Length: 514
Image (cartoon, rainbow, N blue to C red; front, side, top):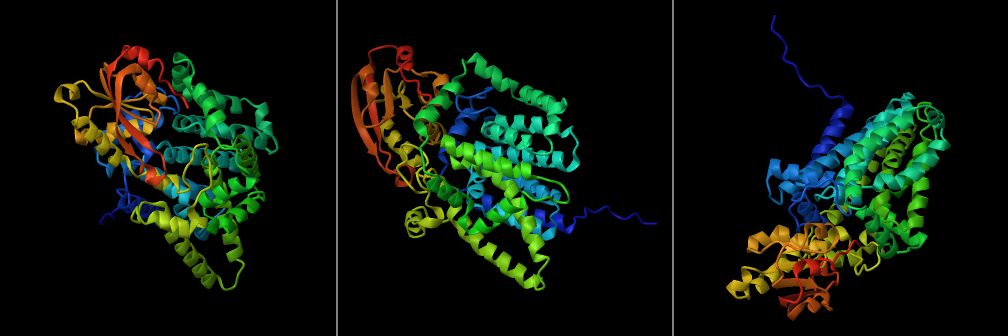
């Protein structure tokens, strides 16, 4: 008898997830080369060239993944966007699994997949190589483990929860902001009895083991991240009103999807297949209150919308299954989502010509114009737009100044940037122009040292050049006002010569952990 060839068979739900993942991966790669590097992408690239167990403002995992990406796929702008696109696809997969765990079938899973794809913030985060895409992936896995703990009542899932919480903390410390809300939600759920068993504490031990390299780095370097976050909270965060906070949340999650979010928030407090998952609803509400009290960025709350999307999708499926005219309702629902998706994708990814984007935001500001989130913000254009523009222009201006120097001065000249983003732009784009690497006293760049003799330095600074006191002469060479999509952050380029003190003395005065 002839042996039948083995074939991979997917269920209808498997096909839904696969098609959605292919679509999501494709749109990120097709439009991945639009505009320029995102500003924090430049910083991630810089950190990946200085691998360590920690950084001033970030844990070590994402720079390591960037180094892996570069080793596997090369240094092209296109290649840098493969890993974050994959992270987004796996996040969507996990979210669909959460929906299945809640009892959702084909309609609910399809609605979850489409909903995840068209949420503006998730679209943006998965379109550049930064910590957020991987943070969302780790947090989705953490939430799935919590769901499994409640659905199976198997206390061994605490070990997995601890492991995934540790991995999430190595991506970004968002998970620590979820800690108080998670503990409060646990205490009022039916799993609070687990606290009388050893399993949660074993999970906490696993968490500590996973993050121990990062903790070791903090101890060895005098807990610099504590200084950074203290400065961040006292000087960076904007004390917003509740109305502004809610508006920003709706812009980032799409106000056109508000019925789905409200449905999810309602449904999450009711049992699914006789299992109570209200812990996820309380986690969302408690964390929302905590984040608002701290004036934290609404972007740190976004992962907790995942259970709401899953619950809202299940609720929608339940309602549709009770309707006689099921197919027409489904056609209207997914047609609406297609229109919303087309709008959100167009406004969240670098698709439109950069020059036309501001006028569209002005015209349809209610859909994409964020309100102020941080002290010092000078633009209401989405940072995922404005943060992708101007870096090549900055580097070109620096190159003009550099090549205006005599050859003997070019041989010893260095570049100092007052902000890590500009230093990152020089380090990533500068080699195309033959520029030396940049140094900066800002954040982790400070740890990498002064780098030069400082006899001749090209300095990027504000209008008041505080570095001039260290030199015999400083000359302003250029002023740049069109960085960050016309956000209005002027940058001045100076050439300073004849350092009055040695480089180490200068370096001791430039540290900025804020």
